[in-house]
Image 1 (cartoon, rainbow, N blue to C red):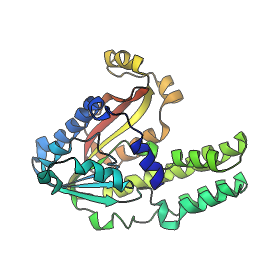
Image 2: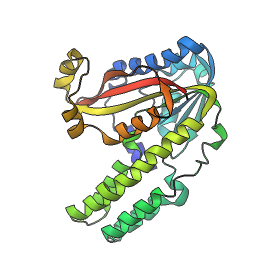
Image 3: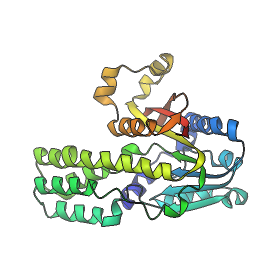
Image 4: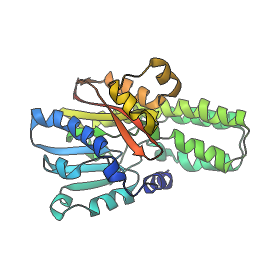
Length: 290
């Protein structure tokens, strides 16, 4: 999983930081909703930080004593921090962590071995369902930060937590029919991912101080560059039929689950101009704990 995430973070266009200007500003505005009430804070925790291209670290560092970046891809975080001034670097703490917590019971190695050995798809599906039942445990790499952050932010990570990795390993490491892949990925994999998303939200909430705040954003719909102006003119109004057909399922599930567990402000929408091939409509908000 670590190498998979490293590859994703390395596969970027040279002008990406500039290209993500609108996306980064939208996220900074979510933080500003909290700063306008709290002012300066002690700690900000950000889960799924990756290469930090969606974060204005200089701005955030001017509003707090410490920024804690959490991600499985330590090398991408280190590269991002290396570009910062010495003054800002002093405020950064990097934490390498598998946010799915599946590594706690050697899930990734076991799954890869089963696929390489072409274990029957029904047996793999059962393994995935059984793995979901083991998730309700504390993430030991996060425990020391529980209830310590004034603001905890979740990046657009719901769609990256495990399903894409499962799809790639099932297709490229095994020899399964389309029907068998469907059983592994769409039956077992989606069942597991749903549990991972909910457990991730639980860990997210545990990091927040009693009087702290959340900042959450997620990609909900892939869009082609030619569609950007259309959605902007419509104020990001999206037909439910389009969302049902093309929306990113686990972003919706993650947002629905977290919305039921915190008191969110008004939700904002914007276009994340991800690459020259297209982007996403994103949604985000800040919240107080219930």
